[in-house]
Length: 470
Image 1 (tube, rainbow, N blue to C red):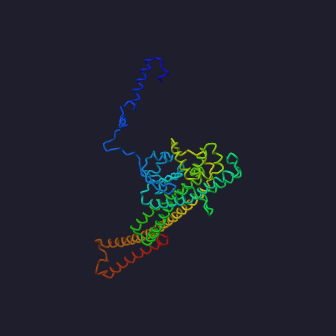
Image 2: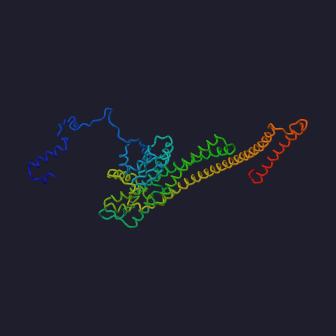
Image 3: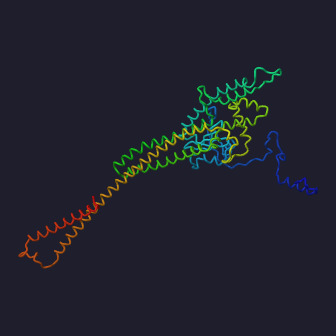
């Protein structure tokens, strides 16, 4: 802006205005070597001391070596460390109610399953609610699995380092000492790299993120299954007691059990739907291969002179040291976060069969729990139907009794009407003692009663004939 001005006075005024606008610099203050910060503007804090950062929460960090560390980090710090957007972190917010969710992102996996709220990366697991007593068993189990995974992969990495020299160079070297590479050795190196994560018995070792994901899925499914079993044990006696005796207390107990059943069924259904969604989408499953994506990024970031060695022997990409260095480099170089719609350009290259088999196993377990709850729900519905039938039967008996009593009342009303007629102040021979006498009065009363009974029996017989009464 200043260079384009041709007038010296305007240039001088503009520079002065610019200096006034930018404010004082640290060089403008008088500094003392003994107090180097004396020239810096002193920040002011409230009277209560330094203000604590907003959104800082305690996180439990479990490294790939099995070590644990408690740290307090804010939302922005976690976003820089994991590359997650703020929208994904809100899923783990304990103040917000989000359903069970499993999200695969570029550098992390977000887990929100029941009481487990975690972020899984290629080298660590961050737990949010680690102080919850219900999470303590899960932390112990997760740490045990991580240690087993660390011990299983460490000897293989040492063997890969020892065999790296044999796979890269031929014993016959040139006069200059330059190692000679051969195509058959490169193919053997790739084959060894593919089999580098296998145990001695031939079973394949899962990547770190899948070990942590499996622990989360197992803890969530086990928790839901235990709640379902406990509810089933409470429901059957209560329902049987209700069928034997219908009372207000028994009905209240069954109502509470049914409310719990509906809540647990909804939670299990949500977990099942989430696993089914992952199994139906290969891209979402490919996003969860964090170790392979990190290794491929590290391979792509190598200089050209090391590209041949990387292609010859890919087993070294699995080592923890290189992964940690790549993870830290990516964390430092990351200036932004990826949205939920961001897809990795390399996801289509990964075979998702391994993760698919893992998810299918827990999908079957969750589906079995859902079937068990559905069976219990059907049992509750059958009991309700049986109770309704019993109540309807009792209501029918009460209605029949009401019909019989109403008919009897009608007949008695007719007899009372006859007695009222005879009670009038009239002169008839029946009231004269010298003509009728007490005998005719008795026969009149007996005849009226017999007529009333005959009318009642006839009315009841007609109702049964019409199937109005049983």
